[in-house]
Image (cartoon, rainbow, N blue to C red; front, side, top):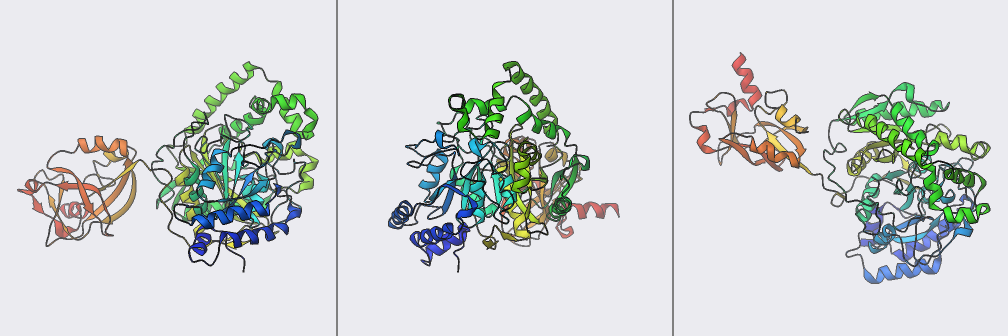
Length: 598
């Protein structure tokens, strides 16, 4: 029976001693040898190096190594010490002495680097065909494209050669290959994963991406590698993500208006996208239709504007000296970056700023947006016949993301009748990576379809601590701050969101204060009851001003809820119930107010 490569399953097998890293390496070497026709590797798995790493880990043990023995693949524009970095251009190759920051963090966490994967040369392309090492083939049908540029990284995970892999994503290269190979593809907020030790495509836009079998696995990897890096001037500290719409029972999501959707004649993809929208609604989402025109105009800036000059700048000295070393289509695209003037760059920056303001106007209305990851998939023959036009089609829903500084996660969303996968992308503003992963996790667990070519989704597991704190505070309210009542705007004006309608533990009494406008909640040792309440969440920075405005005898204390959990909540000082009416029998403030109207 094949070893499960889901990280939780793998680590459980190690703990129970049903598996060792050495045994796993031997299995993966054998499995990799069966897939040489997929053109996955540039530097394939090397037996002696991998067995040495396995023995090293076995000598250390699992303590303190959260990714102990977890195999991963590395896109070959990311450095691994002692192994050539080629960017799919043999004449460019060099052998780094140190690993990229993200790779070193993974190694320090106990992961096993299997090898370096094939890519569209210099990470220029979304299709996986632009490599002298061969066109990487789709894991489900080798006649179809794998998606790029992180082609081999995605196919390695889909075919069970690694638990996860690293790619890069400037225009969609961490999402399109995920969709075409039925994987989760996380494109983190730019700067949260260091690009030190990564050969740039567009340095100001590049993001290291993660391919995984599940959103849970992607979150574990993200937690291990995120963080500001002094060696990368574009890196930044993760910010609190705020309201976690991914775990919320109710949330709002945007959908492009019908006029803006493009499936390039693929009717099955169109039908599956409609089903995906319905599925998100079934998870508690409220659909909001959006004018997507500003996003699509932003996408056209990436290759139709001066940002291609960044691709030229990244390899300027090499391409000027060795232009014939590049694939013709890669060379033509890159050399096009030598043509724009500095004035063109400023004009495009001005337009981008205008478009970002238009696009950002959606965020007060929605928590996230869903789109197809790609409108269709092409055969390798179709792609090679019109390489630029078809590649442009592939970026229709992806090219705007980093220009607008958004985070995104691609998730599997079904299969066409011919067995090829379809995927959707969920995106939100920068630093919303964790809520996006939580929503992707719920999405997958709602329909645990087969993943890649190897496994079926396992049941949910306990995950480690969140990669980024929420920056939110929770408060239980029992009176005029309840939904629809006069003081509720004190919460909503501070960005608060309703999390749940529940009740307290049965150890409280409720009083109508002497002014008749407010209730007082008192905890008692005997004779208590459960009192209806709501739990709201608001930014911690706004919590202080809410508390400061609470008049005596009310205040904020700790309230125990019916499920045994405890949150901050409105309580009353004992002196406040002098001349107050005990209304505990009503079970809540709303019921008491209704009784007054009878």
